[in-house]
Length: 324
Image (tube, rainbow, N blue to C red):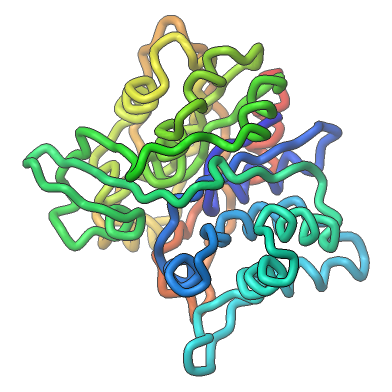
């Protein structure tokens, strides 16, 4: 199984799947330029590591004394000039990259230290930025600026591209081509999922693979990316960049019992539960209770917006296993 994406959505999917007897690989977006990733890119000259770190933590061995390593790599400093908001895992991998002279080697060595189950591949080894064009002609550069807009977040994105056009990491393409199941999402539609489909070689690999390709619809819409989007809107955007006839299945939550307080907080951010209006004939639609009962609160030093309700890792994993 190969999970393509980044952020908390990919973390959730990997956390659940690692509990099952499957051969896992994660293909991770390299477009993040917000928070500590901006510092790592601008000052250290390395690819963004936050999404890689989350995938490593998701797949890390949590048995016995090894649990402390998972906590350590997820730890976010909340004080200290210049270090507040940074995670230990990001700083560790930046240091290891400098020691080994290779970010790929640093990822491999970190994977050994954490005893992860599976493989993690950057989608590309080249520096890349995202560019979004909106329905009014406005253009925005940078994943962080798209993700947390200063413009009118109700505007629809009509075109996404990368600057520059870059090629995919060959091992990531190989993993996709050899998979039995490829999972897109959950995660921010444009900045965690579609951004990977813009990388040269990825759409072609997804068309060539023997794997079933499944898209996991998000629980909530998002101001700045998918304002007022329905499930069908999400699928149409995936097909726009992937091509029609590639998706085999769409997985969507059918538990709409969201806590009132959570909905109120989302409404303040102009976000609503994604409406299930899927009418696809050639794509299998799987509806299941995928909602986690937990309400997630971000660390006090975390300056980025995070999802407070998420898919349940175990429920999501079971639904994906059943698709194979």
